Structure formats: C-alpha cells, structure tokens
Image (cartoon, rainbow, N blue to C red; front, side):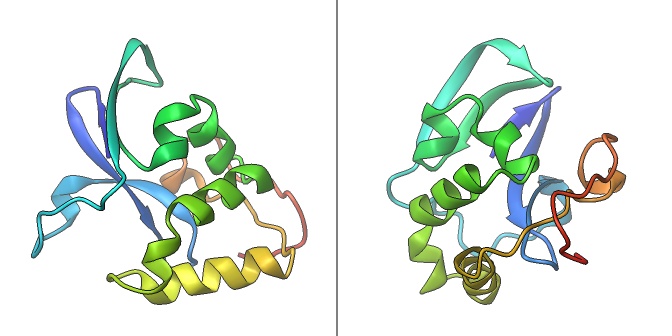
Length: 131
C-alpha cells in the first residue's frame, strides 16, 4: 500500500498476474488484516508522489524495488515472489501468484503494462511475452 498525492493505492496482481498499483476505492474489503511481516515507512522526499509505504520486506527496505518491479526486472520479481511466498498457498490471489511463480521459474520474459496501468510511461517490450 502507498499514499500517493493524498490517495491510497494498493499493489495488486492484474488479470495477467502482473503487479500493478490500483486505487483503494476499487475494492471492497472483507478482511482488514495485514500479512505478518509487513512493515511501514515514510519517505523523506516524495518519489513519484509516494509519501508512505506499507508492505513486504523488499518494498520497504529497497527504495528501487517498486521501480524495478514495474520495469519488469527479474531481480525484483524474484524478491516479490520470495517476500510474498505465503500468497501462493492462501488468499484471493493464490492462483495468480502460482501463475506468476510458474512464469518466473520458466524464465519467461514480461512486457511492461500498458499506459493505463503504468502511469503513462507506455509499453516497452522486455522480451517476447505476448502479455
């Protein structure tokens, strides 16, 4: 989760099992608990409008992790999968996490998401994945 320009955003898996940021207003919450192991941090200087973060180890401790994840860097995907391994066994995105893990294990490459999911930076191929 992140506060960005006064709004709360959630890092979720889209229909293609790719992590993307979405507005909290798009969701209905049944269980308000946070995963164990999550932490919180504030940023001294806003980065892309983000002022505060709640989340898994790499998101909090590695300030380039979010950008690397959105840029589809394998090291960031690996950290995302390791830090969120519990979600392959439980939770609403269990199937998507398993798909993401299988794609990573097969060394499949990913495309960046289209403009609507990536804050206007456009789509650029990092490989031959048809999204």
